[in-house]
Length: 131
Image (cartoon, rainbow, N blue to C red; front, top):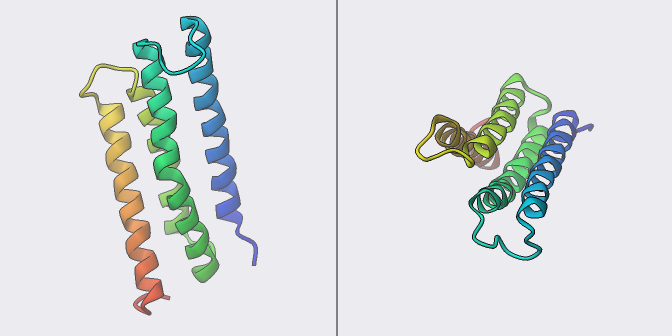
């Protein structure tokens, strides 16, 4: 079985992670800070955007892969993956704006909703309520 959606989203998430690392590195160079955030708010925001990405995306991607192994490529799985990609990009931009703001809040809410949907779908597959 080929995990086309999983591979596609893994590539997208890897690119987003590199973009987030580049943005943090650029802020780090601009602030002349080699370790930590040096109290620089932009660097702090960019570091947290990348860390938050790495806190949520790996488990969601694992769930996407396991669900795709079980049910194959589905439109719902594709939609959830696209929503997560867009949510993580929005969240990264929102981290640099004063809070509260719709990009950060939307990114968080959609990330939670997609992750919750994947958890429920995975549990239903695990316990035989979906197929």
